[in-house]
Length: 109
Image (tube, rainbow, N blue to C red; front, side):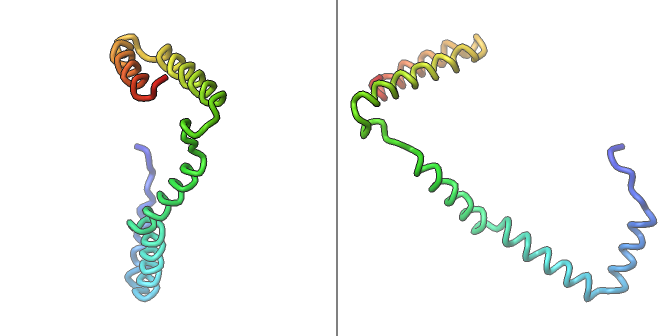
C-alpha cells in the first residue's frame, strides 16, 4: 500500500466542510481560479507561445550564414548525425541511414 490514510483526520475535515459551507465554497472558488489561471487553454497557449518565441530567437537559418560558417554548420550536423547513429539500436540503423540520405538531399550537405 503506497499510502496510509488517516480515517479520523479525513472524517474531521469532511465534518468541517459540512459545518462551514461558506469557507468550503471560498476555498473551492480560490482553487478553481488558480487552476483556471494555470491550466486553461489560454494559459497553456500563452506559455507555449512564449517558449516558441524564445526558441525562434535562437534559430539561425544556415543559408543566411557566411559561407565559412555554413561549412562548419554542415560538419557539425554530420558529426551529430553520426554520433546519434552510433548510439541507435542496430535494428534501426538501416532505416536511419535511408532517412539520412534523404535528409542530405534535402539539406544539400
